[in-house]
Amino acid sequence: MSATPPDAATPAHLDPSELGTKQYWDNLYATELCNHASNPADKGTVWFDDSDAENKIVAFLDDDEAELALDRATASVLDFGCGNGSLLFALRDDGWAGRLVGVDYSERSVKLAVAVGEGRAGREEDGGGGQVEFRVWDVLRGDFAVVPSLSGAGWDLVLDKGTFDAVSLSDERDGRGRRICEGYGERVVRLLRPGGKFLVTSCNWTEKELGGWFERTNTLDGGDSAGARLKQVARIDYPSFSFGGVKGQTISTLCFEKVEA
Image (cartoon, rainbow, N blue to C red; front, side, top):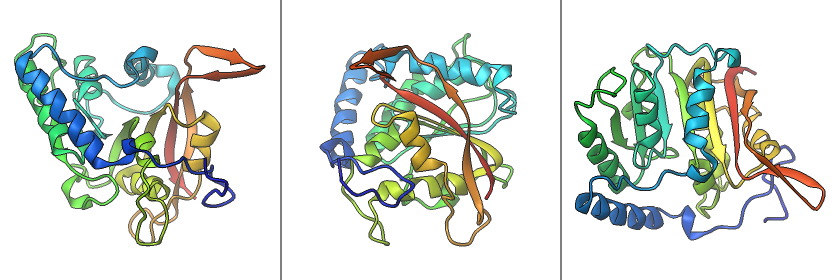
């Protein structure tokens, strides 16, 4: 861990790791593509499957008590670092019929997601709403024009299941000299519509630390989202454990809403 956080409101950085490099993910998805080609039943890794995160996320989004103001029939969903597309396919199967788009900076990841999607074509249990879309797009550097919302107002829901974790392990820096994870929230804010939700799941950061990264201004200079920020509105419970008198969870999922600063 770094001894010095980027500012007083955010957590200290993680030490860089190969999991923060594009080469690592290209290599992993090259292997998973080969495995899927040899055995179509092998759809690749479902991240945080040991915590049943995917099912819990879908159940949370379905829960009327969460008061997320998301319409399953029409909500537009953008999944950062989509991997094999598993989470979006789970939402489609659950009846989320709006536009679902997965993006990843690894072309091999997108090829895997497309291949898995093609294998699902025509399945009776598919939730309807057409095919899930997948695009090669860098969350931190990609042109926003590549992932436009159909309404023009922004996406209803942005998902992240482990992608911020990977970004946090990169030693790359942006044009302002910051570790690239520091600009992540700014990109989320730009993509969401006013009142849109950001649901992030992490195994590297606690709930308090996720709040420190995202529940602040996170505003790019200028643009339609100037003055907007993310505000925590909900969380997902996971089984907890106690060690040395401290209680915790193996992963954390928080939901943020885009609000005016």
